[in-house]
Length: 258
Image (cartoon, rainbow, N blue to C red; front, top):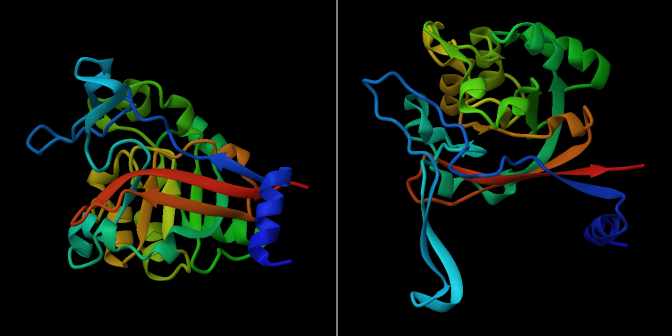
């Protein structure tokens, strides 16, 4: 039996489970808030065109308006100045949208400290138990932050000093961009960087290192707690927006169940 036939049989029998890692996209979806001197992304909006009425008697459809980086979305290399000459989201090779994924679970640490930062030593400790990061795959960083996704206020967790959300240290971001074998990082927070990353050196090091290395980001993922540490296959489906810096995405994981 061919590999694809075996996969199809596994999907039909349920021995391969499809998990949706995507946050529902609506007007309530949290969006990043930048300092007021910068341009702001638009929240998601639907504009009804017709709904089985005089505007269109047999069909229902809408226009929608949103930012490229709203909800569960894909960051392409050209999203950041360090990758400005890199691929736009429409140019990302389709072969890179299906790849193995591992999950590093630091939800307990983030619950105790919303400013928790992933360090290289954390990854090395994980590798000592589970094996190396996957070549050409994804590192999915679980913090439990998806539990906050129904509230803009709780999701951004900001006070007068700025947002407080978990992320990745500058040294770890640089290592992930320049040395790690993965093609990208997936997180549950509004962006791949920590809430306090505006004050890091360099600022927003995860964006700078990943995009500058031609790698990718996936953000506002959900249900990472349902994935095993290793063995999942990730399918990321961003809209292929020509010249786009990213796009809302449907992100799925295939998991083999015994």
